[in-house]
Image (cartoon, helix red, strand yellow):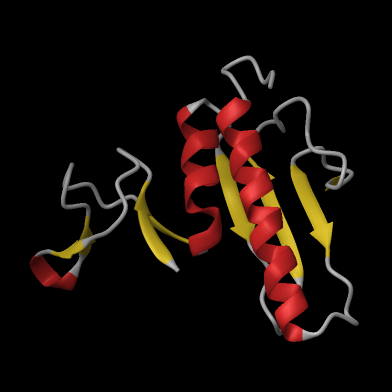
Length: 127
């Protein structure tokens, strides 16, 4: 899990007065926990105006990958992802029958694909 400043998109933090976590770059306090494999994609989406509210890369005990966007999902979403009815959340369902190492390998490939998609998306949602 990484701390990302959603004011300047810096990764990391320092401890300020009263033990508050602050960004060492802009000194803002708008820090959020982002799963490590999604940090690059989440920063890319937010920088391009596709604000995200929640995300999860999936874990061994909870094999549920998702990203929830605040307003809309960028166009040209990879076809292996599914949209929720709210048209704000994308998901990938991992098989519960995967062995741990297979799950980790697929999760890594999935997050790399999402990162590549996030790099191609422009401010108009096109990729």
